[in-house]
Image: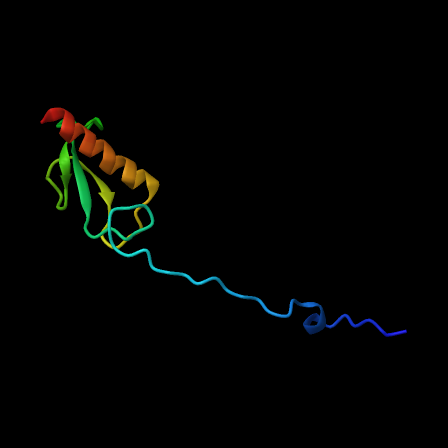
Length: 92
């Protein structure tokens, strides 16, 4: 009868393969790194209503920063950008 060993190296899997990780690149799709800052102006009273297009520098007054250059674009950022595009298409 063979004796059992409780040594970790004998009970561990023979090989563990690490998945390859790839950089998603730069762009405005979810998971990519934002190429620029993105801001959108708020109404003059600062009550939170967004106005105007998405711009890459602070528009002055009240504004919301949507994305930061070099940071990962999230689903929330993508929704904000899509909403701004929809507003732009409705207005003109």
